[in-house]
Structures are given as structure tokens and as C-alpha cells.
Length: 394
Image 1 (tube, rainbow, N blue to C red):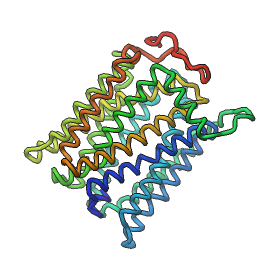
Image 2 (cartoon, one colour):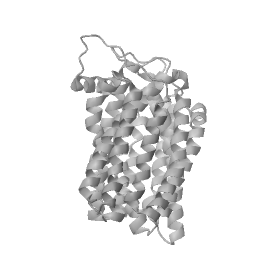
Image 3 (cartoon, rainbow, N blue to C red):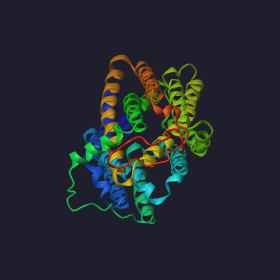
């Protein structure tokens, strides 16, 4: 919103911005997976939050002194993206150290509830503040929330770094190879990686164009746009509370597959939105509510499965691979989407994105995930990786 409303960024510039916001996940993922495995994950998360606090605070400061430019927004987006990627890797690797393996689905569902509540309140408040205070000044609130996060994390029990042999000298390339090998050698994680790549690539078409589509094409106000996005939080909250029930009733694999296909169906409502203003807004709200609901219902078991089948000693490196893959797909997707949005129009570009997102679950359909009922009974060994017995068990 700051780029659109303050500097009047073009679709291509928004594509670059979206790429910079997520793209650093490539570098951080390649370099930081082993670091996270050998370091206190809580400390990594706190440091990442403090970095984001300081970086984002520079935006309202620059706006207040009338020197804010697109170059600064690009730089802050890149650095905050790097800190966010590091936080996410540590976050996903930290949870199995706090709760028992059999509670991972429930734990991730509860974290999903927390995320959903934030998404309900955050965008609605942000849209209103952006309208009342102007976009850059309102970002001071974003900076404060990261500081609050760091303070709250001090109350979480500290974890101890994984012990390693004296000969185990850290090296980012070896860490990356080990993380990639752990995923590609596992028949349940391999299709999840390909799904993540395809979904993120085409989903990244939405990131630079969605706000521009709502604000410029559908002529929604910033406050209404914030309320619309908040509807997604309500849907995600609903899914977070029901995710475990869906997995128990239909199985983990079928839940991931069906919900992923459904997500693409609801996303289609965005580029199809039009007609009377109220109808167009309603279609976006339905896409946000239902689309986020089914997306979260798929994401929770996907994250839990990663945490359940890999040992903690390599989990950070494996999560880092997913972060790197997402970062690479984000750069390619955001730049492609921004360029296509300029060349062929926002609506047509978003329709192409929907088709790509719809194709991603096919990787799971033609894999052992299709018959996965519950969590596998064994954790895959960090060395000598092999598929656990009884893929459909657990």
C-alpha cells in the first residue's frame, strides 16, 4: 500500500518489490539452515524480530522527513525479507523441541489460529490507519508489532543448540546438499517440495497485483481492502480449528490434495470479480475467506509432516531448502507476474496464476501422499534416508 498510494508504483515495480520481499529466502535458506540447526532457535527468532523492528521504522521516518523513495522501500523489503526467512526457518525447526511429536498437528493448528486472529485484526486496522495517517506513517505500527514479538519470545523456554562433532565444520554448501538430499530421498516430502515450487511461483503473480487490482481496477478504498483481506483471516481461523478433524476424518494426504485444488477454485473468484461494486467486493471477500480456509487446512498438515518425518538434527536444513525454493519461485513468479500484468493486463495475468496453482496438487496425486492417512510411525534417519514403513499408518 505504501508503494501504491505514496509513490504510485507500476505493476512492474510492484513485481520487483514482491520479489525483493521474499527473494532473500534463497540466500538465507542456502546459508542459514545449518546455522539454525547449530544455534539456539529462540535467539535467532528474537534477533530477527529486532532487526525487522529497526528496518521498518526507517519507512515512516523517511516519509516524515520527505525523503522516502522507491529505492528505500526496495532495500527495506529485501532486508526484512531476509530476516523473515531466517525467522521462519528457526520457527518451524523450534516447535518439535517444545512439544511431543504426536502433538505436532495440534500445535501447528494452534499456531494457525494465532496467525488467523492476527490476519483478521491486522489488515483491517492497517487499512484504516493507512487511510487516516497515510501509508508510510502507519507502518510504525508494523515496526512496533515486531518489537512486541521479540519481547514475548523471551518468555518461551530457551532451547539448546544441537550437539555436533568437533570435525563437523559448518559449510553452507554441504548444509544445503544435506537438506536437499533429506527431502528428495523421502517419498512424502519430495512431492511437497514440487507443490511448494509451483504454488509459490504462480501464487507470486497475486502478490504484486492483488492490491493494485482491488485499489485501481475495482476502486476499493484502503480501509475496505483491509477489511477484505481480514476476511481471509477469519477463513484461516475457521480452518485452523478444523484442520485436525479433517485430517482424522479423511487422512492427511487427501486433506492436502483436496484443499489445494479447492484453493485454486476460490482464487479464481479474484480475476473473475466484476459487475456492480458490491458484487465485486463480495467475490473478493469470498475468495479471501474460503481460499485462505482451504489453503491453511492444507498447509498445517504439510508443515506437521515435515516436522514429524525428519529428525531435529537436520530439520533446520530441510526447512531452509523449502525457504530457498519459495524464495526462488517468488522472484521468478513476482517478476513474471508484474511483467505480464503490464503487458497483458492484471485480470488476464491473475487467471493464468489460478491455472498454475490448480496444477500444483497433481504432484501429490501421483505420489504416496495420496494414500497417507496419518503421521508415519517412524522418523526418517538423518543418514541413510529411507521411506518409513507403513506410509498410510500412524
